[in-house]
Image 1 (cartoon, rainbow, N blue to C red):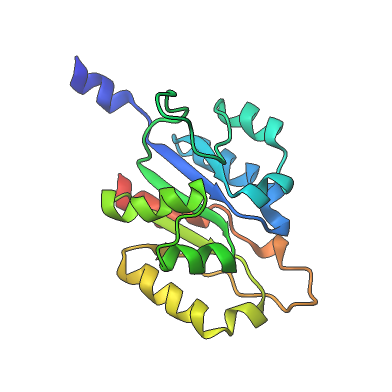
Image 2 (cartoon, one colour):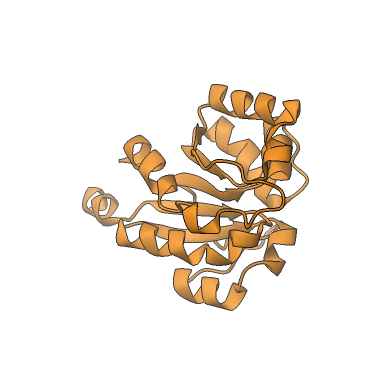
Length: 181
């Protein structure tokens, strides 16, 4: 009976949302994941909370958005992750994550994911001036050596609109599904 329940259980995807102008569109990734038979929970960096409609996201996922650590003894509000998608992945989060900095819940989860062997993908979203910084290039390389799969969104020009219309949210699933299923 337990084997049958395991076969019926949907994989659980954590979507880590960072503070970027397109973060308000995270519902596109949630919808795509749900259509691909994933259950989804959102973990937001504290600044990202100002970019998303928390009520809409919580209604869509059926879970509270996580942004801060829980108190000892409190129940875990989300099931364990089978995979993690970081979208949009900002310059700040990518560099801190690659350096092992764990000063937010989102970064703590990402840093632990490596040790737990949780498949993780990041869809970078940053401008070309940030992408030119040597720390960013080194951070991507470190994440790759850690097994993180990285999306292909091109950095945008600092004065441009950010290419929100070209950001492929569903690419996170394309990168992760072969690693999980």
